[in-house]
Length: 109
Image (cartoon, rainbow, N blue to C red; front, side):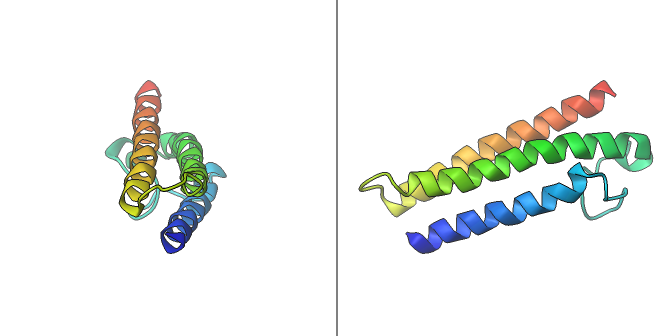
């Protein structure tokens, strides 16, 4: 299970690192990286605040992934498949909340 825990933690660190340039406003509108929907791609004045907002929420989701991957590993007698599903479900819920909130924020602009 330690290999799986390391994989989840490294994934969380990579995702967190990807969020930082978005939060700092260093990524211009592009076709590969960021909150890429028609409204943000066509309007740079919307791109930057939406990516900052969404990046902050995804950073929280990534940190949650790291914490849960470590925390769930301390539950005694937890089967590896249960551990995997628990980590993935909690992270997916957090990421979904982050994405939905970014869409709501974008629509409020």
